[in-house]
Image 1 (cartoon, helix red, strand yellow):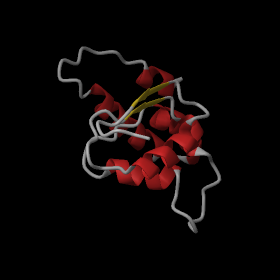
Image 2 (tube, rainbow, N blue to C red):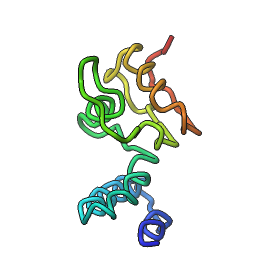
Image 3 (tube, rainbow, N blue to C red):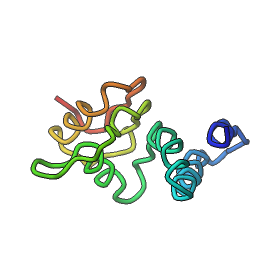
Image 4 (spheres, helix red, strand yellow):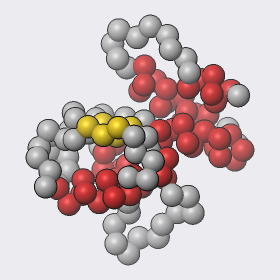
Length: 119
């Protein structure tokens, strides 16, 4: 119930940084305990914020790890509902974007392609 109320907080946000604040809040939420992590992880990956710093590379390596890397127990790609890559220009290659899309396609509802063309 706490996670749902935290996610549904629609306060006025003229700067558009409210989603970034929610990501920070849910990251802290997941650090409380294992039970809170199991509840909060689905909200954390629902709408990932990837346009700040090197977050795209970290997210891609977490959701679709490179060959030879051990995968986690939870399929985090299936938790992604909205994937907005519209603000990314040079962070990804076509193969990296297609690998990411193949991992998140199960739960994906809304996708915005990166500014560079994808094949």
